Image 1: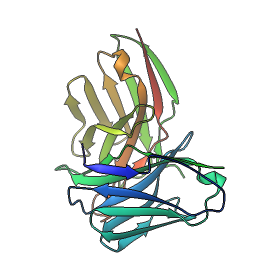
Image 2: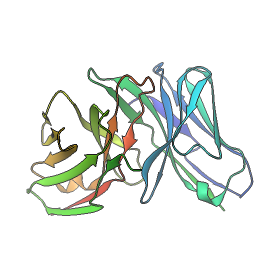
Image 3: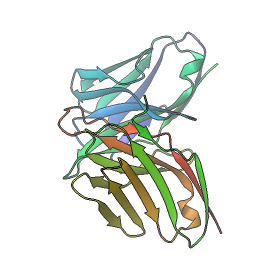
Length: 114
Length: 114
């Protein structure tokens, strides 16, 4: 258990509305990530953070923004949701494992944009 | 450009037999490799990892083999059990980049038949 809590776990929203997903961690990890998982695409990195107010884009960042005002919270915002953003979103943290960093995932947030 | 490839979308094996899941990568800078298991409606869970300084790492029924010259790694599960039925993701990272990002393959769905 990496101490990650995602909320909401399930959400249905309408096209064009803003949506914010929250990731909360309890173990003071420096790195936090947002991935999305889609059939045929595996897990793709949206954004990541390497510290408070320090964030960077991943491979599928268009249409998403993030914020990290506290170490424990990493927010993912869809400014204007589209049907292509229907997906499962996973927050993750990383821990040094001696030879490399291992990423641990939260339980996921299922988002449906109708 | 897919840097981590899992060319078999699915694999079916009999209980008690060996399961071999394969993964290829193209980026020679990758030096840390991981396998994750994912059940439906759950987050991916870390299974086993290997550093590029090794060619084998074993943890119980799970063994990962790394062939650097071929840029290929494989996960062996022996003996396979019905509870191993899940989607398996291969992932890779390059140390020293500062971002500790993982690049994932698209996954292989393993079915272990009783």
